[in-house]
Length: 353
Image 1: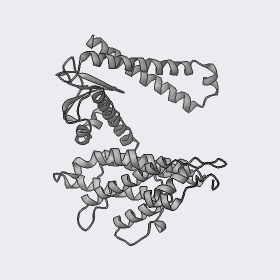
Image 2 (image 1 turned 45 degrees about the vertical axis):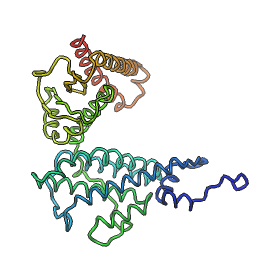
Image 3 (image 1 turned 90 degrees about the horizontal axis):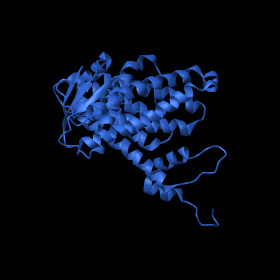
């Protein structure tokens, strides 16, 4: 309001945070028919997002060979297929959202993909391959995937943040083509890798579980420990075997052992439960066993709550008769998952008491 003197000069914001950050804030914070609350903290957060993209792009450029990457048909590894498949789904969802003028929903999906899946996960997963010259084919596949995924992600983001995306796109490309006239990414079945998506999500769940336990136990990241993956599931065994190179550093593991039973694992080892597998870490010299029991009891209480909720829904005749079959199947799958995890937690508690 001019009379209240609380107006905001966009030029001042652009000088401080950049035009892209302001554009993104105005699009994501706006809804048809509603007044908009403007928070400078959101502009700052979007400036940080721009910095995140720039830093990721610089990292990729720094690792590119002189003269550019010549590989056009690399031998992709499971983690490469995972991020390409995630991007493929993103392209489909974002295109549908933008066609429906759901601009805020579309850009939130792009934001989450770039920040979390690409920067926080994929880049960290491929660093061991980039820093090693032992397998050039693997390194080339990682660089190809980094470059391909970044370019398509920039195209999706360009309508919202045109300046930074144009700058990075032109730097990455050999041809002097503007991102404005480049082809919009398209969903294709050939880039859908469901198996690899499932496999990598299992590894991510294990990494999150290990990090949560270490945080609860106040274990420093510099403190490495051997990690045991115990499972009889051949799919999980194969996933961890193929992903051992990046799983070890992400899980702060000095060594990773994948086995069918608990042979060689101390009784006081700390555990992380994931579907169809148990992760054990010999933290005996670092943690108090009573703390591990307390943590498992909290997990038991959480699972009891989840099981109560799911059972309540599935025993509700109105829900079963009116809910879509897909929703009912989803809740049944959750029931099976939580029941299995509860059994694993109870078994672990019994061994420690």
